[in-house]
Image (cartoon, rainbow, N blue to C red; front, side, top):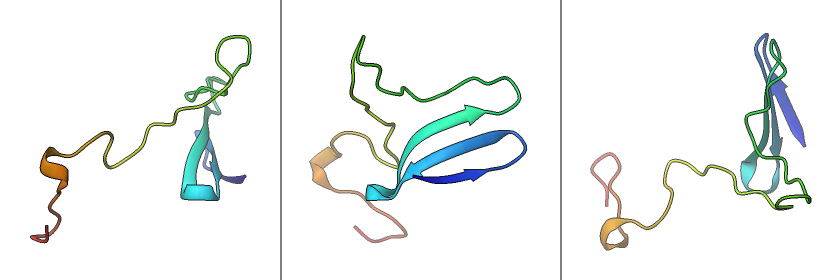
Length: 66
């Protein structure tokens, strides 16, 4: 896992797909990502960006290109 941090946040990113797996607020200790606790649900489902879900007509436009 690759870790980047500043005075406020510590972020863990796995190299496969550059997927964010951990976001920790260093001042209050709060974790903002689900860690996959097997007692409840042992998997993770990270927030994906810039697009989550299907696109209308399976298309998008960026900088005038479709």
